[in-house]
Image (cartoon, rainbow, N blue to C red; front, side, top):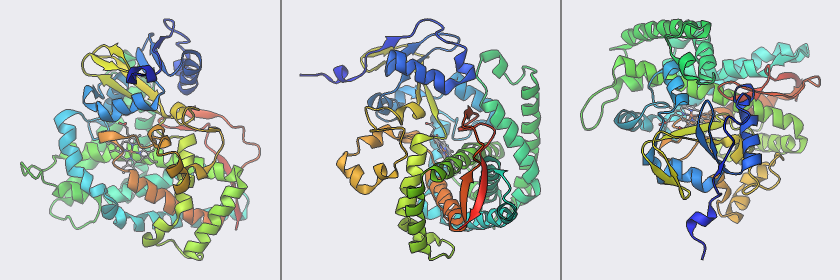
Length: 451
Ligand code: HEM
């Protein structure tokens, strides 16, 4: 009889410093090369040491079944902590448990319904502005447009009108924070005190952001009528202790949500429109669904659930192009994983990009095929693929904003597609770059055609 351990891939050691510098020039390609050459369970030793896994069962152990053995005390998350503090994305231990328990109810589907108005209004404003691009057949940068749109939605959902007055600054701050976060975490350069130009810009951006948040929170106290997340954070009380969040904690949560939720959603939108422009049949089927459900009118929150094909289109887009493409954890003590003893302090890493293309789980993985996610296919494969599909992660650290993000993406895509065909400029040469997320290099140049 085969034991559980026989089913895991065998651990393979890559040669010391193997193709080390590619970790900087193209980390995703570097990981794909490692997997191709050494298999689905690899021990890498170089300037940064890690165990790389590309097996759904082992990943599930790290994120779900034995998650208590792993935390986020890695060089990568330490760099994130320097950049946007100790909000939920980076928090650990008792602090994370308390914050997650406090914040979780605000992100339930029923609680986020109220943000659909902001999503719709902001989408409409963008679409109106695009009218000129459409008339003049101007090529524009879809990545920039989607980033502005998702930043406005995140900013207004978190801070209401407080966002309008500081929008330009918030764009500038998040730009610096995203750039720093995406850097390779070589220890000395990551220290905030190391005086590189980027580190100095980061310190200044964080100083300005904290001063802005202090004023915003001060103005809001006693005036908590706004229906935004800031008011919710200000009024939250721990059920057991009665304690509220202090100003630092609120500022860190707001920033973590802007950074964790804005670029990820924008990137997923860009990739979905990219795939639609290449897959005419999918686009046509999607448009039929949208017209059947909306009859050309604005989508109403209560009917979003009827846009079933739109949902699977987004799911398939995030399979091929998972925005948060890479994940990592730290072994908190000596642990056994897949029959291998892993030492305390080791980094465990996996690439969602590679997992979502692993032929053990996906037929014809390079093909954009939303039908993989429809109800019938999911029933047929007994949910096997779902364990190898992790755009929002899994387990206790699953993305808290996933319902918000799905609603936002569905509203934005529905609004855009009703009005325009988005076409990639024929001169575009496809190349991917890794910032905080994985995106088309230089932004995606597109042209609009009216429906
Ligand atoms: C398409 C959009 C998004 C994607 C692909 C995405 C992806 C993810 C992933 C993969 C994680 C887990 C990282 C880990 O394993 O530790 C995560 C966590 C998180 N996300 Fe998202 N996210 C998206 C949108 C959002 C939005 C809109 C928000 C907030 C408004 C948000 C807030 C967070 C927070 C706070 C966490 C940390 C949760 C915790 O550890 O308790 N995300 N996200």
